[in-house]
Length: 125
Image (tube, rainbow, N blue to C red):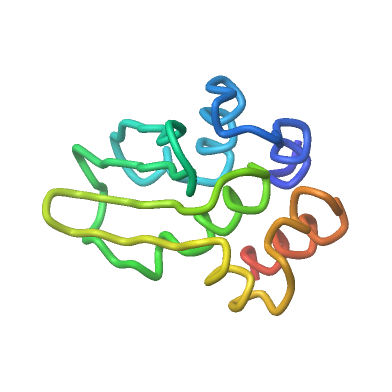
């Protein structure tokens, strides 16, 4: 199964759906970068997800996290912000920023399978 197909099947309306969020985080590629923990910030809006690396397999580079964060923002409907930390290094991407980067609403990735497939393919190029 392709990355996009797997993410399409796991997409969710709510950040609080732990099992789906864990699957989406792995499918987006965060797991392949090192050992991490996830924190779901669902107590009040804006809703956020923090991926905290305790061991990172390569130097921290914000460019490395943008595609994965974009995929999560698109496939978790009520997710507003993705944060990535490793020690003192920090990266964050909001839905507004991801939408500006894409040129369309990032949430379309979770509503339109063709857009998700196209974005996923663009990452492989």
